[in-house]
Image (cartoon, rainbow, N blue to C red; front, side, top):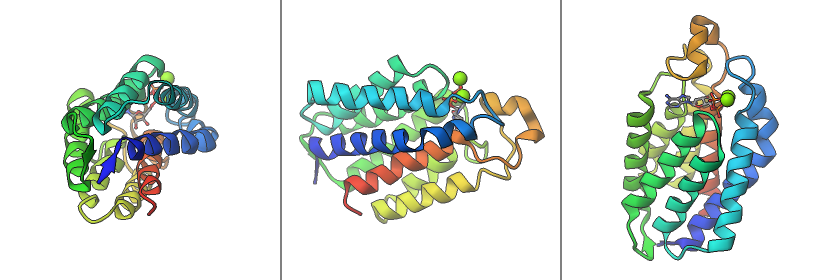
Length: 199
Ligand code: ADP
Ligand code: MG
Ligand code: MG
């Protein structure tokens, strides 16, 4: 079973990964965006790690809801509301249980990804974070490490796609040949989940 401490480890591991990869995320956002994805997410997840330490929420749901709220209030740009919605919705699905199973987390994340799709209008193949998150959620039925591999593969598979949502979509066919920054950061988020699980 996964407790609040597990979810805090997940968020802390994400903050560390985003910090480590911030330059790369911003570089990916430069040919097909406005070169701020790494700095946006670094600001957001640093704030998440800080608030979780300060408030120490006692349930998995409360950890994710607080993290999501913090992202929405600290990240300017498309990715803040989208990641914020992902975590907040996932947290709401988990309710106030003190511990949840991996199956419950998989179902809650599925609802979180659906909320992202509803908010942003992107479906798989649109060259967005959804291209990493959607296969990750499907693979969560197998294991955390399978989900991490699926997310990484989904991010790499955005390279030949034409962007249909967000800033990159303004480039049309010129978005081809570049990996989507948001799909790349989503792969970091899911890799951090596997890391928190010790996989
Ligand atoms: P901004 O584009 O506002 O500067 P960021 O650079 O932080 O925001 O985030 C860009 C990422 O957000 C993109 O790479 C893409 O993965 C994701 N994104 C943008 N718009 C959408 C959308 N409508 N649905 C899903 N993801 C999106
Ligand atoms: Mg950007
Ligand atoms: Mg921006």
